[in-house]
Amino acid sequence: MTMRRILMESHLDDSADYQSIIGYLTTYQRQGDNRRWDDFRNKIPEPLLKLWGDILIKCRRNGFVGPRVENSRIVWRQVTGTTDIQNGDLCTMCDRECRRQDMIDSGEAKKLRTLNKGWHEPKPCWEAE
Image 1 (cartoon, rainbow, N blue to C red):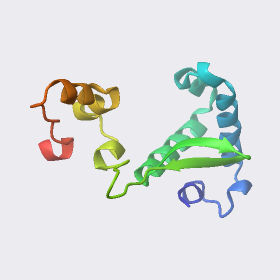
Image 2: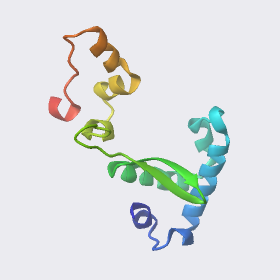
Image 3: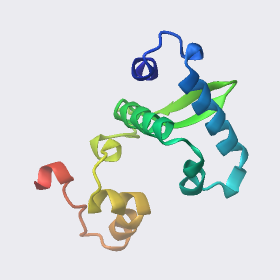
Image 4: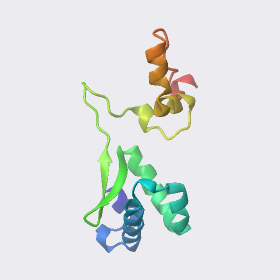
């Protein structure tokens, strides 16, 4: 739904931009373990790259991450959570750059929590303001 709204198409198969994105993602996926997005993105035309960036941002805000091409369609992983396991929360879905998020992403927070029993994670950036 989000991609159809951004591309302004009722059927994604009718969108030339969607088909182009599929082509680029397919090529990127074929590069295997040696792929580097920062190098590959230079091959994508700037207007399409901006459009893809908008799609990624809006889909991430709705819990959809990790796009990949399967059967000529873009499929996403969805961040979900239950009362038993929290896979996604406001911090992990936040677009802001902050020290707390860097600590979580790098594994530094887990290391500090394991090594220092009295250590507490910093407050989320929206609470610290």
